Image 1 (cartoon, rainbow, N blue to C red):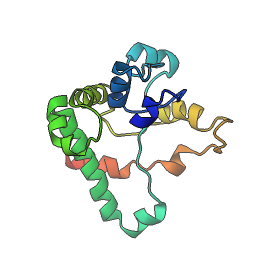
Image 2: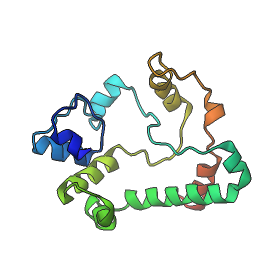
Image 3: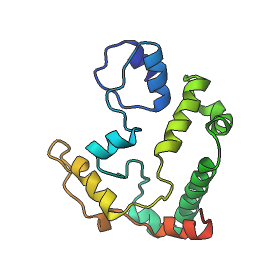
Image 4: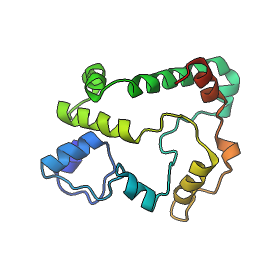
Amino acid sequence: MMGTLKTKQVDVLINSPSILKDSVEQGWGALLFDGTDEAVWAKYIGGKVPVTSHFTLQATIDKDPQKMQAFVTALWRATLWIKGHSPEEIYDMIEPYVGSTSRDANIFDSGVMKKVTDYEGIIDAASFARGQKVWFREMTGIKPLAMADVVNTSFIEAARKAYPA
């Protein structure tokens, strides 16, 4: 994506804060909407929205629920670790895997993500309803789905019980 930005031929690109930081500093791009500003977010979005979720087929869950629980528990424990560590400490752990963005940009990215992350790990009805306005509008072509048909909180609830925040 850095190569795409460097061409200056892209109108809109959604990406990580680290790439945004490098692209603004290098003159390849500009920020159009600051979702990290709580007042801006509240004005246009209205509250939490489930934006990063993990999906699997029901058949996979049915086949090996213990493996699914282990996966969700690992995600929960990683979330708790991130919550308890500084952006610099996070960078020290991920440095071999970050690619072409700078150390400064990656530390910036971690700081931004720590600021906007929902450390509860639960999708509630209100946040799902806010998300529906985006996911199920005419432009997406996605037919509306009921929260009960696509969200299963039992695994995160078990992980939270085993490893309280």
